[in-house]
Image 1: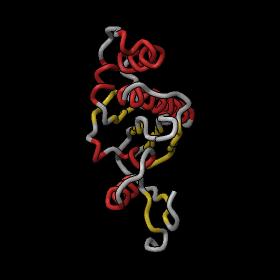
Image 2: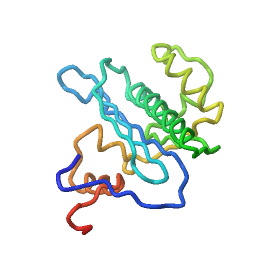
Image 3: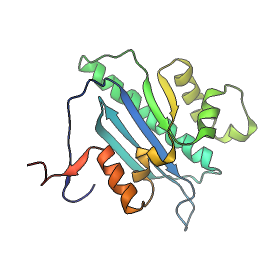
Length: 175
């Protein structure tokens, strides 16, 4: 991720699985495809992350965020399965962190809207996971959105803050 930085894993009392998802709507000026990203934390430590330019063009920022949310939920479910296979079962839901209130509203509202018809599969998937309490959706303000680092260029202070939140530290200063 960053030269001279490495992941630092620490023991914590936190037993949550948290996933931050984000999207940069129409960020590519050539084809206006969006970049989505997520980072997953187990017990407060970063374990997986992904940034990907998508193959579709989203018609709104909410759609881009919603599709990123679905990808993050899939990753969170996979992590919970791996933890279960390792004997680390947890009844607490996956904590999904999203900085788009419209996307969260769509996920929590079971009413079908014509405006969301083109993302219907993701809508049903996310609604099912929220309704079954497999996932708990939380709003996180953009300035605290850890996955921002995976979807767009950031000013240096923001970049530095987010690398610390990811658990990335200068490998030479830890010795």
